[in-house]
Image: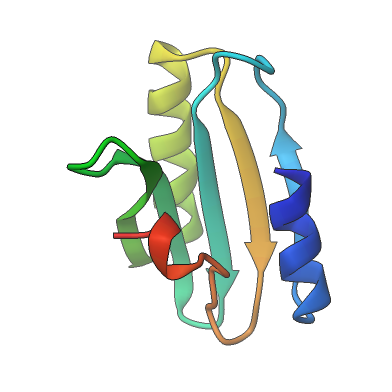
Length: 99
């Protein structure tokens, strides 16, 4: 996750780990805050077994994203949340990390 935060920062966005979970077991979610609301990305397993992210919410009010994270946390107290603030709404995933 620290490499992802550095990738975002290097591109001019603010990024931080805003919720820390278990180092070995917690799922990772990414919220991207932008001028048109907020996007939420959650864990995804590709057909070939690779792990990455899928968009769960797009252009949603921030409260909707917060509520979704709280629901997820009620099932997985070990989840991680990375917050990205980018005016253009970029999430900074590479092509093999996102579906």
